[in-house]
Image (cartoon, rainbow, N blue to C red; front, side, top):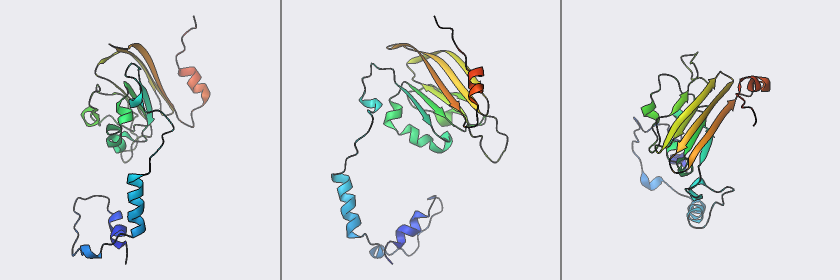
Length: 195
């Protein structure tokens, strides 16, 4: 039966303990239309981005990325391999789902200081909490000041970051859960008087 190897192997979720017995490599078939499409995609198809990647911007800019990871422990390898994210001076991550027993060394990003984390309290030992904020900043920057706030429905980090080559910047990362009332944001977010 054509493509049965693909169907079987597509069900594999880990190579650990995988054994393939009596594999007949001659029975593995690739449809010609699939071979042609793969060749076309590799040779001719180019993806036109609808945005200008950070790595194409001048290094004179102070670059900030804010990403909803929907579980940093599950998507950390994606973050570490994304050149657009890694070109930032500051990275903010929402819905990190990190907990107090997660160690910073497991979430080390080369070129960045250990993360500033707002972990949510784990109330059920079988599941991770749904939220959490993380802030990464480059090793050539200094974290001057931070203000943090964290509840199950509203979180923010306000950080003053000094870049030796770019100056002083204030970054604000806010996560508001869908069930968070706007009034809660207004009551808890610090406002500075206008001058």
